[in-house]
Image 1: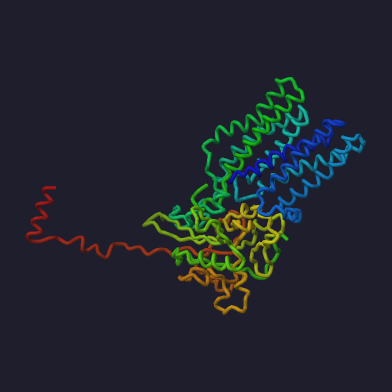
Image 2 (image 1 turned 90 degrees about the vertical axis):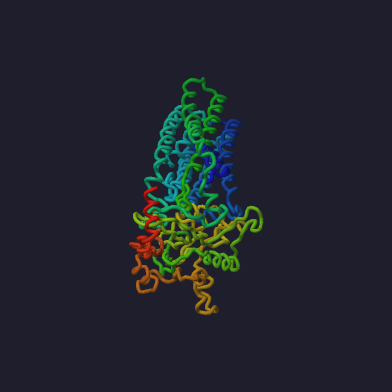
Amino acid sequence: MHPAPSVILFTTFSGMGLGLLAFLGAGFPTPQGLTAFLHWGLAYGLTVGGLLASTFHLGHPERAWRAFSQWRSSWLSREGVAAVATLLILAPMALSDIFGLGLPRVIGWLGALGAFATVGTTSMIYAQLKTVPRWNNWTVPALFLSYALTGGALLAGQSTPALAGALALAFAVIFHFQKGDLALHMAGETTGTATGLDRIGAVKVFEQPHTQPNYLMREMIFHVARKHVPVLRLIALGGSSILPWMALFLVPLSPLTFAVIAVIHLTGAIAQRWLFFAEAEHVVGLYYGER
Amino acid sequence: MTSLPTHVEKQLGLVIDLDTCVGCQACVTACKGWNDHSHGLSDADPYGADPSGAFLNRVHSYSVQPAEGAAQTINFPRSCLHCADAPCVTVCPTGASFKRSEDGIVLVNEAACIGCGLCAWACPYGARELDPTEKVMKKCTLCVDRITDTSLPEEDQIPACVRTCPTGARHFGDLSDPESKVSCLVEARGGYDLMPGMGTKPSNKYLPPRKKDRLETSPLAPLLDIQATGFAGWLDKMLGKLS
């Protein structure tokens, strides 16, 4: 699949932002005044910025409001509804922290649930697709949720959940690579099943149907830099999970070190998310004899 | 609404005969022409160095090697299969993508399409392409504006690809009626689904190429065994000894 920068930025930034929203909502930590404004501002900034980035790849962003209507059937619609609901629920909690209004924390807990639910719906947009076998399994929700947990905990300065998150993340990243490499083979689809001509014999492409790449090929068949996969996998695993995990033990923790660890984590997250798209094979490629 | 209908009154669709398709691309051209004139199906840089455009029908060509005998060239038209369990419909966040309960045709309401592309991701068959200038999703409509237009002569009230096919490799009809011509064809010729493992329950069917006749021996074979006589026979023998 084509690794569109807008979607990579959207999923990493909004995932981290929603994670931070969840921690702030739950009251870990409970900053006040200006500190609260900066914390909540960062969380809202990342989440809203990510959501806006996701509209850049739309053909008609001005119609995006229509995407809230089909929550009964569509994971993408559910994501939109869940994101907006979460941002609205948490707004009074944020104001309460900043201005010391003393609203009950239960509102924040509700918002924290909403934040993780939103991340879950984002992951299901990908995990629901049978056409992309690498995504069509439980490792995708595991990946997105542990990214939100780790990223959110690092930004919130919470070392215990960050350690737990980084550990969960290591397993999710490794399982996603390992399961993903076998997924297309396990799905059992070939050019033979795509055309049904396997009932006659061994099928190979004789001539392509068009001379220039089309929308399908640009969007769903991606070759460039798959050769860099081993190095990028190392950056993804090391940056998003192993380095932050080690740093949390070894480095004296302060807001500054948490910020540095969060940046390292984000770098790994972006590398992982690039691979998430670039390595994913869509079955339509089989018609073109490509993957 | 992006939920699928629980029941369709009929299921219109195509039956494509891979035995008779010669890969002439006439259906591709007819489809492009009709749809471009009716509701738009654009190209980007059509006369420039890097032309590209949206098509609703593409004809692939495969080389298939059976266990015995020579390889076969099989031309393979690919378009929307108007699936019973169309994943492109349920993923749509806006309700632009829908399946009609009256005839089972899968359509896009272009005015509500945000061009997110998720329906194209959800389709295993590559049936949907984003229009490069309109930025909305395009797909085969089964020429819904021809088949329902009673002002057209009756022979034209079928999809443009079917109307134009010079070898009669494309058939249009109601696949939910077991008595229909298309259903009889599917029954008689062993029509099959593409990628049934994807769980889409496609409506369009493909008829496999018929088994090829095999020439056991060449009709020219006796000529290869002619024994030379006389001078030519002597020369043949001598040359045989030298080589």
